Length: 112
Length: 115
Image 1 (cartoon, rainbow over the protein chains, first blue to last red):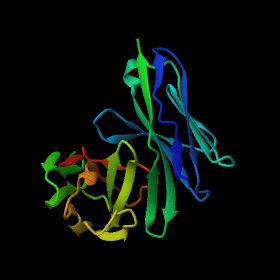
Image 2 (image 1 turned 60 degrees about the vertical axis):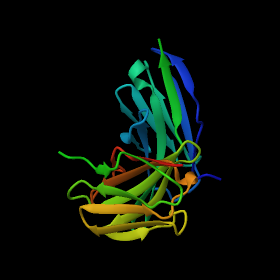
Image 3 (image 1 turned 90 degrees about the vertical axis):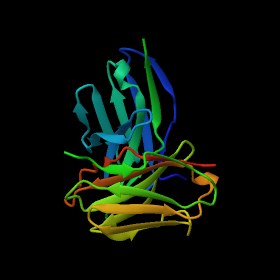
Image 4 (image 1 turned 135 degrees about the horizontal axis):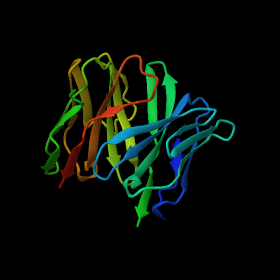
């Protein structure tokens, strides 16, 4: 079983739609969680952290369910510029420091 | 501020040749990571360094791969001999010592094609 699993998509949605991505992780010792965004042929960049109580950043809402080992990202009022691949990332604290494990990503295409 | 700098951006080589990828992390960052990205496997951690010391190289696929960090401002990833299945985008990333935010700063990547 992969450490971090995501539906690869693509999710094709019209502009203005609400879309949600899910992610599951296998290691219960995972410490912290993040969503990264990767544009086509570019490097990944941090989108937002995911906190236990859930958190919001503008149109983006992230939630964590530790009991089910499940993370979600909700995008409201989607824009054309939201088209990208969204990577779920899990951080495990090892003896040497933080170790980030990336999911394979979910591709989003926002269309007119 | 300069970000993580990788070179070369693109490399096309023939099977059996040696490939050396280079990385300059952000100044002051104590952690340096090498990742490989393919369509099939996504981003895979190959190795990471803390204060120039390799901490976890369990992701290095085999002995053909080696990585070094001779000083705080430079790291190399070497593949010798290269094989077609090594074709991928190789990313270097760095993060600061005190970071528990999970934020890695990635370079633009080195796209390797082995023919």
